[in-house]
Length: 386
Image (cartoon, rainbow, N blue to C red; front, side, top):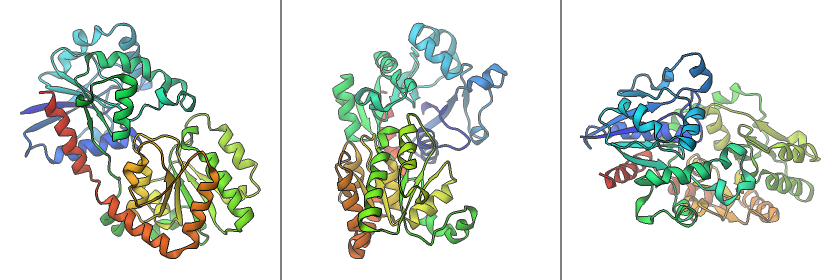
């Protein structure tokens, strides 16, 4: 029996990003737990606010799993200990894990336990490659990550592009880095089960007008200003009737993005929608004329895969991991040239056959990715260290 403990601290009541990935990974590993002779345990650290109140409980979405291990420190304090007193963890925390063979740190850190193998997930190296695009919290990752790698037995990452970055920037042996591509939170089957027309009444938005769509965190790395510039050019020079919809939480350094919107002559047709339910995001994907994703850098680029899964034709960057995900099922452009983005969008909305070809290719491409495959690739990484 292989006993694995996975750090599920990033999972929240409304998981997105890393939290969503971990939630889906745990679900998929539990499905093969018996057939692969695994025991999956979950470790969780409380939020600082809850810890100060003495509340160390797991989130409701995780309480039905077993075994559960409560790490009685919030992330802020454990990070300080990692930085200045890593010997704390084997002495005080390791006994909590009982007979765990592998501890999987899922968010750029793993504690220096002595009696278990240690694996760390690194999704991208944006903090090392593009420090100007990240906030002060993310900039701390590099130093802490370098320290954690001293006791890490293997790394899990989500694309060949990220693997090459890890080899180049962190000098970690490539044979100890395992690529486990992500999968969409949506499936074509799930889409058919959703009554999307009824969903449209849940939000005050006019779906009768066509729109271009972007989905992700509102932050500089995503290159949203290029989308707005391309949209302005298309409205002014091509008189397109489309709206622009930006779905995502505000991240950091977003003020210039909203200034760009405010300065647009077409700002009334640019809509920023904050966090939406999965069903509503699916609705926007399914009804979009074009999904645009000119990000400067991605560890994987999950929104590209989600768009293809739900039948939105994709125009995206030709950088980092995005070509791995999109293959030949999207139009890829230089993210530094907003005119390339504008011209690619114009091609898609002007040519019905091209648009349909992209939709068909996108769905076929999306079928190559599944959480079952992600779980099996992750299991291969686990077994490599035993």
